[in-house]
Length: 175
Image: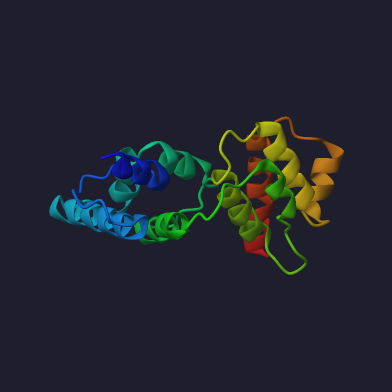
């Protein structure tokens, strides 16, 4: 039973299967398949599926879901892909706050892809101090409109940085 609880903690999902050897990847795929089946049976719309899915998650998965940038989910399939991409990752070793300093936007990378990579990395760090996340995010930005905006008015929270980033991401998409 302890093995199952450890797997539950790692995947962010409640394991209701009796098989202790089920790995996190197949559990998450099975979990998603069950959720889709339930939604299909209730004839739930795309919007209802997107709203209902987070109510079925547990601690770690909720933290991941809450960290998604606003308006970054375009459909339930998009949400499902992001969920599986996030929880398919096998963790070889624990990540620590300084690992955020290695994440850079890159000259040819969009702000959107940088924010996604950064947010995923933050989820791998337990008890991440907000100030450290804020500094890591700002440190990894390449020179551009968002970094210029931040240098003029330093944000006081990670949420503020993410909201400002979202504005620039929308500008990137529209140009």
